[in-house]
Length: 155
Image (cartoon, rainbow, N blue to C red; front, side):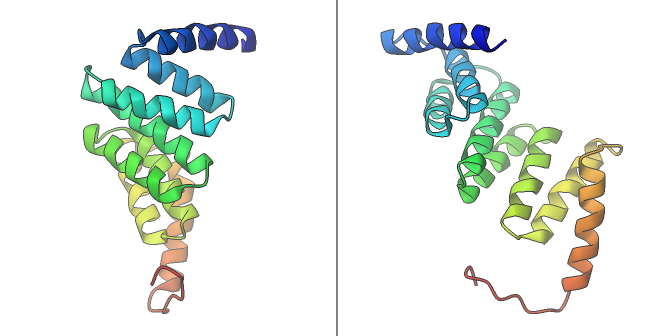
């Protein structure tokens, strides 16, 4: 599998160098770089894919979601959140992007927004095994902190 990834990545990189890369090719190359944990390269290719995109908005949502994952893994939470929000705006029923959005908000310590994202997942997929326990735990935390002033750098 890894060897196949290496070969397809080399072919895709050659297409990028020659200027022949399609938006889909750039997305695939970004996904390969993401799997290899080369986040700056993944981000670069995914941004290029978005610029060149001429396909369906439903598919474009996947590119935004992948870009969000790249940013979050590169510890750029706010940028990641913007990409997940773009993904769910294009495709409101995109459960994976909603889960990723909830995860990013939780990492940012924005528990109310995280809770809302996981509740969106459960509207589309009531039995979602990722969102249900996360939503339940966040409900308890949000309830516990209700009325308690929060001290943070952001406020």
